[in-house]
Amino acid sequence: MAGDAKSPLTVERIVAMAIAIADNEGLEAASMRRVAAELRSGVMSLYRHVANHEDLVHRMCDRLAIQYGYRDHGISSWRNGLIEMSQRDWEMYIDHPWILPITVASGPYLGPNTLANYEWACRQMEATGLPLIEQHQIIMAVSGFVAGMAIFENNSRRASLQPGLAPEEWAAQERGSLARHTDLERYPLFSRVLLHPDATNFEKFFDFGLRSLLDGVEARVRGSDLE
Image (cartoon, rainbow, N blue to C red; front, side, top):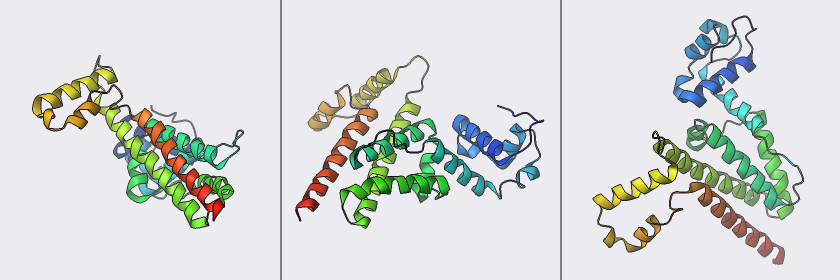
């Protein structure tokens, strides 16, 4: 992972290294000292390019915002626009799990690329004809759903990372463990869900939940047209 000491130190190299460390070891590992060491530079040299660690984290988030920026490529409706937004956010959260606590705890850092994504989503919602604040509420509701499901998916992936154990095998193992320690006969409906092969398939939950959310928005839009 170590960088080339002969390459000039730039904001781009610092941010890229910090993201690489966070991806491999978590955000806590991406300290200024660690980033400097990987770039074979002095810590104080980093401060000529980024103000502090908080500034570095903000730049990392905004870098991912452009990397996973929303794309037009033939989008013809507000619904397809929200699907594009959701899928790109989902990919970002799965590829870079460390950004999720930042997004959920305090909201995304509103850097220029993050704001550009939000502006893009707002343009898609204009076609609904809903009041502006409702458009914003829908964007936030969908964004919150995506983030929440990504947390479940990432937690499931971390828990199932056992040598030689496929995700479905881990899920079966967890179901067996629960059955040994809990009287499942007291919870017949939950037991039926637990036995379903998709009981822990959060990618399918994400797809189904997103469709259901957008169906609700569509009904709201149709109702607004009739008012």
